[in-house]
Amino acid sequence: MTKVIWTLFILALAEIVRSEVNKKVYSRAFSYLAVNGKKRESITNDNLRGINYRPLSKNCSCVLKLADFWYSVATDLFGGCMAFVNHGCPEKFDYIIENHKCFSMQAAARTWQASRSLCNNFLSSHPVVIESSNENLAVRFYSISVVKEFTQCSLTGFPNTFVIWTGSYITYVNNKRTSFLWAPYPTQSKPVTFTNWIPGEPNSPTDYTDYCVCYGLTADYFGWNDNYCKLNFCTVCEIDLDL
Ligand SMILES: [Ca+2]
Image (cartoon, rainbow, N blue to C red; front, side):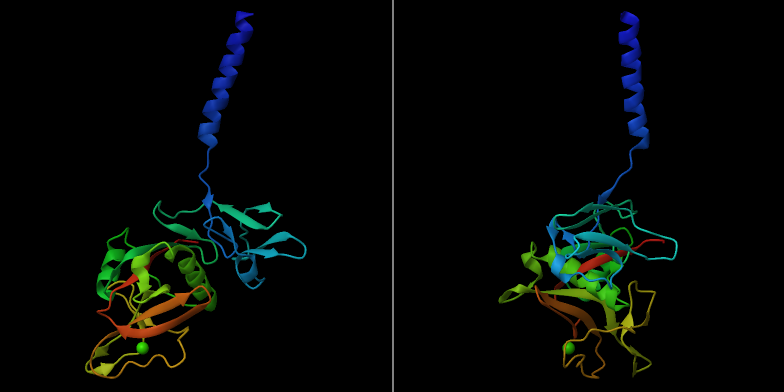
């Protein structure tokens, strides 16, 4: 009898050890469907990478990101899809499944320069760089889903309108105005190609002053603006993961 009990005890112990060894850390993936635990079915469609929910058939699909790479998905067929993925984002960053990046909303309002320094000194991240329409959508919906908790980011007098710095600015080289540049770090810059300007923007004058690119957003509105770099807005720090 004692022998049986010992055998059971050892088996149980072995099971505990094995489960510790096999433990994988999966965390909630931010997506258009599931952000902060809220389902966002209405804004999904089948054009996006990541997880798409089809309300009619109540099923979820993975969309190819790379030719040989599929996301692993657990489905909740009663209202949306929940994606759990293993990823390399540091603890203080959220994983954004749509563009395979780590984002972290920085709540305290700062100038553009100070926002970039903040990100650069925060695990070597940088303010968001937006280079495609899908990335633009990911930035938009990530921002609106997390920013509401941060009153510091709202526009004075407009509690439901928020302004966030990107990593872009326009400057002068040899007294000649550059194009808009992505400058995620002081030593890096490349021209902006994709844009999502608010109608009438960009409108900064050629006055030998740098202007910096922010975006304004509400629950149903989003657009970019070139603005005074000394204004204090929030920012989203980004880390690019290796594919
Ligand atoms: Ca402007």
